Length: 129
Image 1: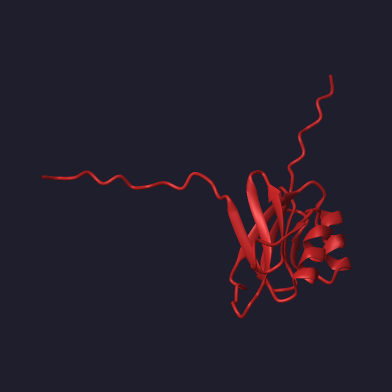
Image 2: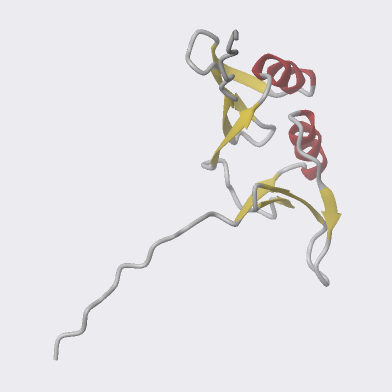
């Protein structure tokens, strides 16, 4: 008997956990870019922060000896220059800024070295009627 195997498909991402050396510093960094976190603690687990974007839960947890610097994120932002100024103001690193790209983009690093691609939301053309 031959059994057909169906390849499963992932339909969307629902959770991203970032392990952070300093959870408060990371929270400040991400809030400077516009995210709003809520403190959480599940039972006797570690205190951490969570937010949600378009159905994706993002959590900031203490590192607890685990390295997660290989994580790379990507966010679309309405004002790239303002976001980069906020990143710099809280001590984040701007690794690359492509102002002339369409749409403009940048690569930044958070306090734990996670790389984050930032892309400005494409502006819709204004129609002159």
